[in-house]
Length: 168
Length: 168
DNA sequence: TAGATAAGTCAACATGACTGACATAAAATC
DNA sequence: GATTTTATGTCAGTCATGTTGACTTATCTA
Image (cartoon, rainbow over all chains, first blue to last red; front, side):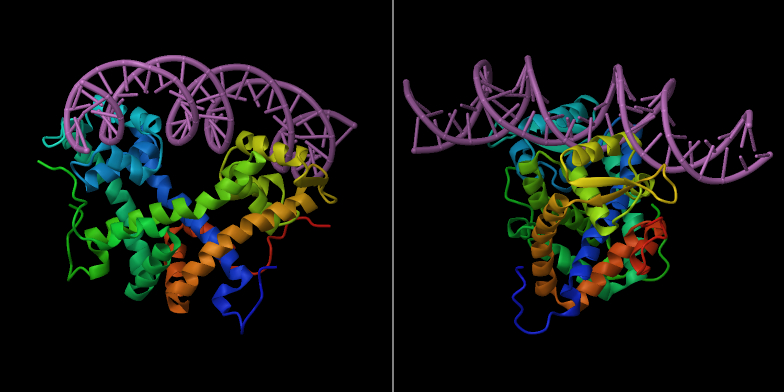
């Protein structure tokens, strides 16, 4: 009904192609998260813990509020998994030197180990998919995903420097 | 540690490229599911209902066990959302004519309407991403996702005919 | 000094997964 | 025809992850 066509509809915009995209994302994402989920279960953790470990690993010294804005969950949801990770010694909190209200987060040795394990299982799957598809396909893959996400999240992928948060 | 290199590592297989892929999938998938989730919430439904509506819509006459094997969830998890959808008149069950133990599932008028609404919000996002990236990128996107999912799910995307389940 | 901000906590709740056990009807097999 | 298997549904309980709203404490800022 929204289809007031102006000119021929490119093949890749046909309804069945769009439908395929929806299912591709469903199946690929399910399998992409499946293996890490199994690994995490051995630690009594879930996907929420994974996301926290990932982003703290990528951004050592990140603050709680920065993490909240990345994950887009509530303070209480984060609190539950974060305090678990801190208690069990996977994440270390240190008060910010500039702003001492902040708790700067970073992975401990134990946290780094788990982070690497998780990364490795995901890397294997991605490397396989990338190799089988080739460099050109990879560029297309990245372009489509980039254009699929909200614009507000895209800068995260272009800037090479970390966000200017208070560091030691 | 698993990096016993034989020859130069292609650029697109470097650690930071793989890391980027992980985050691309996270952000794109989050935004991809965000809008449907909002729509579903108006009906008191969640993402689980969406998946059921989607696959029943795509495969009218699908059986409960076929649906279970696609979704890879337990009978109880499916039962909860499915019986809700049936009770509220979005999905119709009819006993199979060949095997009367089966309950063949299909969308009602009401179900078709919701299915279309949900499809439209997702289509808008995908069409936008596809147009901005171009046909070649789309091919790459599809290739990478296809190679990322388990092989067992891939036939679903190649065969044009529906699975030979009992139909009217 | 007063107000804003960063972080944490408590209580209560919803959703969507899980397990294991059991029931029923119908089909398939011996 | 009797038995076993299959398709579906259901009950009861658990867990992980998300939500809201209210409140506290410490610290920074105007």
